[in-house]
Image (cartoon, rainbow, N blue to C red; front, top):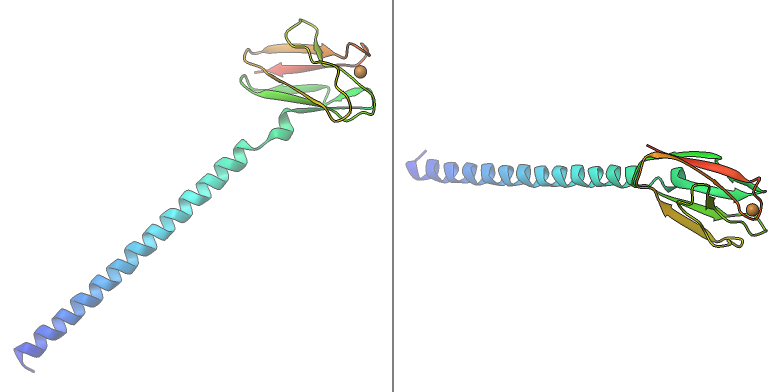
Length: 132
Ligand SMILES: [Cu+2]
């Protein structure tokens, strides 16, 4: 074995090492991207819980009757009944127009407290939002 051969072998090995390192760093990038994507997916699914802030109006009642949300949350009422209803705050904090079937009303609660409300057309229909 000559010195020349040794050098060539050495050069080859170094090339392989570089290639392996490149593959390893590519793999690291792929793994990192995967983690970022997984993190984004988790964050997105944590944010998308609109069902918790929705009140359904059906069969002359608000459901759920009491809804607890965090300050800053927006509550959306949807009239799923086949007759019109309204959503009116007892303390005049919010007031919807008359909601026909399928219509929605939204209100953003910024201050913690208890917010009772009723339907002005059918005052026996009541509910409340608790803001924490
Ligand atoms: Cu009503």
